Amino acid sequence: MKPISYSNPKLDEVTVSTKPVFEGNIISLQIDTVKLPDGGTASREIVRHPGAVAVLAIHDDKIILVDQYRQAMGRCELEIPAGKLEKGEDPLEAAKRELQEETGYTCQQIRLLHSFYTSPGFADELIHLYVAEGLESGEAVPDEDEFLELYELTLQEALEAVKSGRISDAKTIMAVYAWKLQQLTGEFRI
Amino acid sequence: MKPISYSNPKLDEVTVSTKPVFEGNIISLQIDTVKLPDGGTASREIVRHPGAVAVLAIHDDKIILVDQYRQAMGRCELEIPAGKLEKGEDPLEAAKRELQEETGYTCQQIRLLHSFYTSPGFADELIHLYVAEGLESGEAVPDEDEFLELYELTLQEALEAVKSGRISDAKTIMAVYAWKLQQLTGEFRI
Image (cartoon, rainbow over all chains, first blue to last red; front, side, top):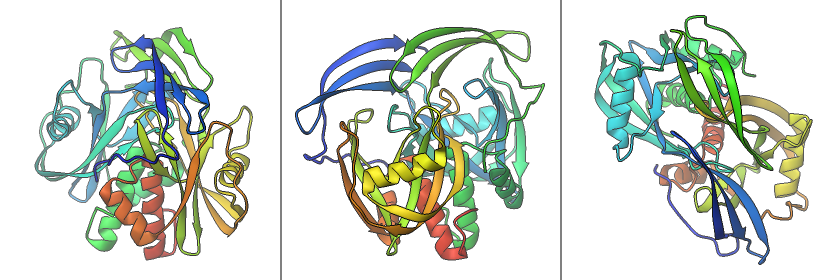
């Protein structure tokens, strides 16, 4: 459920040096030189990220989504509520906070579904995906530079949105898979 | 299936300026200043990535995985075969190439399951996830600085590996969900 660390002496690389390149408000970038298993060296471009939370929340048989402009793609994205971890913040508390800030909803129960890396090849971003149940609506209080629209889709509408490409980010597709599976088996978790 | 672009005048941001920060072998980094829907401005840290392919390949009722050291997390990751797109490369050809290079397997049929963004908040990486069928084994030919170990897991073993955190990256968890769903419904695609 949470990532476990393990080692494989035939595959492990060893950090030789780290060169900081950029330190931003959200991410930082460094170039690591590593020693390969065969003794050679290679260069790795690495993005550091504080980690994030995301929430699969079903209310009245509809999944709660937020539409938001994403500069990286130059388009809006329909995503489950999510946000980055504040420094030292507990992921579960962050999940409840983001759900309430972005959608106004509070929940009676919340539990971890998966923690997963989004881009192992170049970034350490880890998303903790929660399932929230027992939802009650309230007023959203998004961040100052955050402009959102709330959407609530039935399973059929969400599946159509995945098929059409209207939903096209990893965590949201994963959440729709989990919901579909829950409808078939009674359990969100695989 | 493929992401579709759409606009929402209440949410859209407009790029005011772009400052290049870093140009690497795989990723580049820039800081964009954007005009917000309310007329204010904000800064966005953006990673550009060439895009990637990944392959869900089932052979003799086992999913084909590769174990690989990932410097971003400082640990090995058990992932479906994947790799970045070469310049101008067709994603379907890239998927066949990566499958063969990393695992030795060739396939008789291959089709797109989903294209998805991994980290909409800060990166434009788009992964094209394919399903390969009719597999035949052969010799793997990994890149020079790529050290891999092949694993083949049953559905039950793959589900256990997701639960334990041994599998902990988004594309691989999504592939295991798709496989589980295919076992229940006959269709990989939701």
